[in-house]
Length: 233
Image 1 (spheres, rainbow, N blue to C red):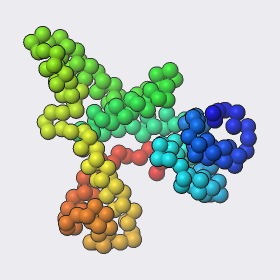
Image 2: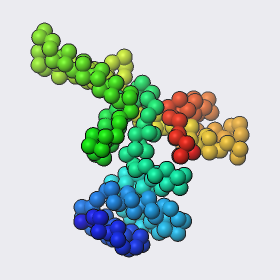
Image 3: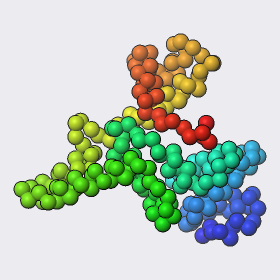
Image 4: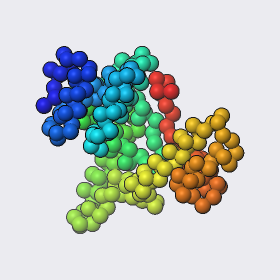
């Protein structure tokens, strides 16, 4: 198992060792793997070597890869906080209402998996407000003696705000990812292309019928995108 003993060896050796473990399917520390990636991303040469090896890694390694790159960006900007602290700051702005229930559980999953409760790292306020609100609704449902147990189970998604007023956070999440990607692509073309030429790559990517629909994707994407912290700009 990959553990803290590997921190004493060179970065190249650590990366090679991680590559062997990932390819073999053996258990490994995601935290240490993330740290190795972060250090590799600090220089062009080691980052290229990491990218070369990572091409053959399974999809489930994408998580710690992205986390490591995120850490490296923060460190280059002089921010020495760890991954959990950075991620909680990135999660501070409350998401679009359609996405809030799903995003709340996503943030909670990260917070628990990184032992935020033990490390006394605060959750974003909107997450605790969501938990307080839905906890009240679940208890109200439990106390309702007029409803059968089966009926209460059916009402649970609404108590957790996953349904109601046409809401479906999972469908909204899929759409939001498309909208956000459209907005990112559009911004990347700023200064390079203009007019319909700037919007055309988005229309083609999502196989949209016309430019007007592509512009609507971009407009919605800008509303879904959260402001980036200074160290990530």
